Length: 149
Image (tube, rainbow, N blue to C red; front, side, top):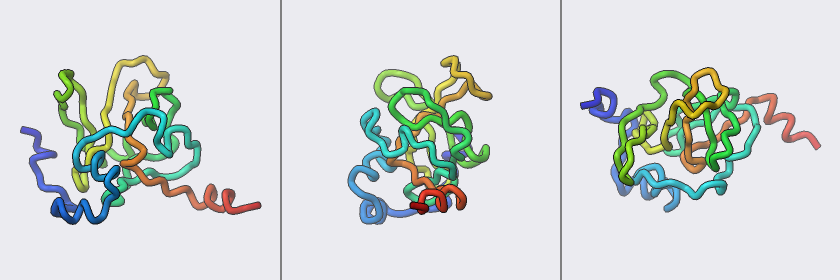
């Protein structure tokens, strides 16, 4: 038993409410643990400074300064925003053992975390997260720069 995932989510909705709120593609990934195709997500190559939040509930999850280029086809981060922003649990689907990453607030599927791959990051972790699970809120300064002609 995992005490984090055994606790009910802070944001809880019925399946019908999630389906109404999310697009079919968002629902498939966030609520059914799907995966978007590699190199298709809107944040794979983004370098904008800001905070990445859960697309389902808006909880802050990752900062852009922890994002790095892993060339794996999905946005990669070396640490979540805070230790309690995500839940990690063992996933044995697809005949392999991986660690699934969930939003701690609504328990939506975000992606997986891998370790020991040799990336030159402070944690040697790669949080491989679906773009469709995230929403980027640019820093105020970054947003102002993007609005300038």
